[in-house]
Length: 410
Image 1 (cartoon, helix red, strand yellow):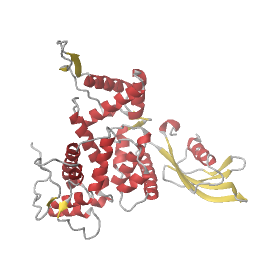
Image 2 (cartoon, helix red, strand yellow; image 1 turned 135 degrees about the vertical axis):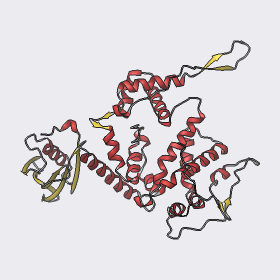
Image 3 (cartoon, helix red, strand yellow; image 1 turned 90 degrees about the vertical axis):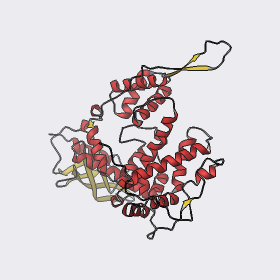
Image 4 (tube, one colour; image 1 turned 90 degrees about the horizontal axis):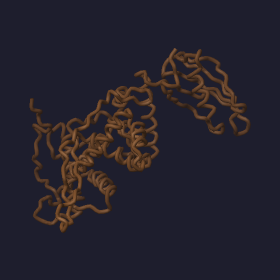
């Protein structure tokens, strides 16, 4: 059955508004034209509440596309920055035509995605659209290259594993091992992906022309290219089922999902992990959430980590210990003893542990309700975490995740 167009029933009437920069081919395109592609004349009015996301809500309620264009007019700097970063990561120079093409692709993606945006989820539209814009930029680059892929995800995996192959100086076994460790694939699947990436790279091979006087190269296509496919159900990460990790992740808000992915340089949809040197700073993350500073973004990130941990606990994929400081004793300015309440798996009655920080010892006054005290597995985790802290600055509270491999349920 044919799918119904996303924007069916929406009005494209812009009234008195029109693009400020010419997007036609009748004159030479400049970078200024590309940078101001979303600007309208006359200048659209500001939203009544002062929140730019209200334009998206108005577009959804009135079914008028012009409000989406008003939103793009107000947020053009975000899209320019994203495209600039994307293009300059490849080369120091780019053409106005290529920049304009990317701007238009991003506009199409916004128009495609805005009807599904839910403003009541407590996040901005910029945060919601961020990952889709990333995929749009990558898809654009994929289409420019000579290779042929069945999906964007296949393209991402191929680029990543060939990058690792280069970093490992051609060591196939090391490449497969690292790729499997970073993505959660089995080594067998990683080996298949490396072979598929090589087939793609070799699909277009230069072969010297038969004419010795002709220095040009002919490109020969390999017709035996076989698409590579895989099954995500086979992925296990640190003894945690990938399906449940994905389920826990999708129970978070848009804002929490974005914070976790950008800060940890990981794609939770495919499990791909990038170089941590490319992780997004809290200053940049703060720019995604209007009215937030770097410290606010850091606090929000820590809450997102905690919420993801608790979601995994609910699904039985993790155990956790929650610690809460009850009292401390000091000798001068130094803390010599402390009492902490602890709770297991975010539920049940609390237990209590007394710490002698001077002698680095601990005594359990009472066990938490969900603590299998006969194994001491969880109790040891709580004690170790507190004793590892600086005695001059003991934490008021802590949440400690425990991987399944270190805990055997009684």
